[in-house]
Image (cartoon, rainbow, N blue to C red; front, side, top):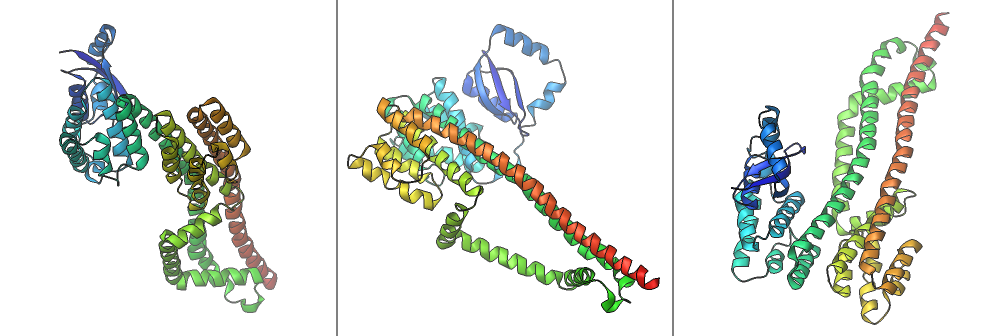
Length: 421
């Protein structure tokens, strides 16, 4: 049997590589999945790679990299975006290697450790074997595959370049995932600072300040005003802390419920766009989604009107989506794309100029992707700058609150010393 060079990721996300012997590329991928690895690339191995692999097999460290192949907790939940992205990556590899679509789906069924993912692949296979196009089979599962995904696959079916289209689809999904993760990761540090500030204040008001109460109780009205305020606040924390916690939890719960409603979501999306720094970042992030989706669809032969409709649907902020919905009808009536977009007041001059260049040269798709890359860099830079401002502000806030507590305690102690003198 032939040897194949592979590169895969284990359960912890660490990338490993090696050489495996199998009857075919799908069989090699199945062996890797059985070992608990997620295949990233499988190609025929050269003689040098085979020799290096045989030498490496003598080292005991290689055993730890292969994992146990046992299903993890992630294999027991419903199908999520990561599963869809992994499935698309594996389909791309198998189709590029010349495997037929139905056989590739069979391999996916055999390789999947997740019951929900195995069931989804089985349903797709049955639909394809029943005579439906792959895009039609995908459209039967709108909770997992959106219009963008389906139209990309349909364009691959029409052009006969399914493997190439899936490759670009995977790249698109990876870029959006990286952008979302950068936004989420950037918000972790301020949230940790905020949690530490709240926990520190609760600890000091609940345990530190009450320990000074016996010292101050005899002074009565002679205590300084800041010390009185501090003691009253501490008493409120100790006696009614559970009530304040319930009230805060109730406010948070009902606010969350209201913000998930259509009216609440619309109100929040309108307010967040008006914030000084965050509003600009949110707007650029939404335009990044639109530009990347639009450019990717146009680059794969999707008609302009269809691409505009689908790309607009990727914009989650309804305030920004509303004007974009007018672009398609305007273009359908004969208006130039750049003229329709420039009237919206949503795009910056740089975006309008890039779209104008793309329309004049017949390369709107590539120009849209270039615009998405520019906006993506601006969003990442803006997030870093916002963190540069927010983190010191959180530290200053915590320092001011702690300083107030300490100064109030010291003022009380100094008052006792003055009375004693």
